[in-house]
Length: 252
Image (cartoon, rainbow, N blue to C red; front, side):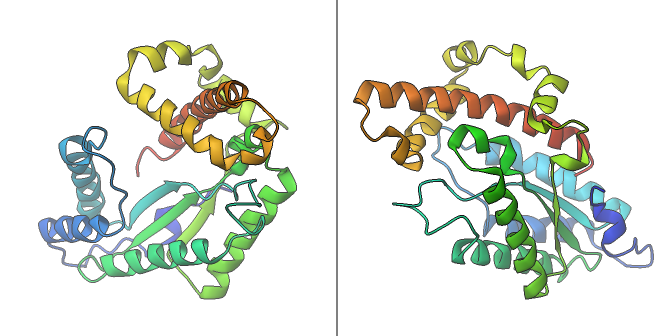
């Protein structure tokens, strides 16, 4: 069953007196400490994202409901165990990230006592077969993530995954078909849309090191072609995954 952030969190508290402007401002201040920052050409948070976030948080406050944050992430460890990670399980990096998320949610309660919850939509199956991450490694990674949250006593973090929204043995393909992603011309989008093109080049460059073991013994041209192919396939998968999360969590 998919997690219900409102039902599982603090019950709606009509009796709680809340200053909406103060609650929204406090959320944005705390959020600025954990948000990712990009170069000026691609970062549109100040021009687009900030106002969207303000409106979203304000709606939760108006309803006096716990603020629900959905974080698509924590899919699995990179398959490059030689140069980047020690193994398939979460390590100190995930431990720190989870602690920051829990601390962030707790900080929101200082001004908005109704609270804040984070749903980590974690599913390495979206990209696993592309990057060479086995299903057993993906399952072990997510199970250990859940164990870390439980063992730490965190109460503001919950998990979700494809299994709650698909019915077939191939959930990734089901999602791609559901949103018509297979018919998308990613080559045209890379060529015609600057943001998509920038993302593609970043993805492709990242794959050089992330999948370094796969490129051993190949020429520069073969590696470049392989990285480009992986990047395009990952971007298509990401479109479908993002559309699913957006549809199922339209209230967040």
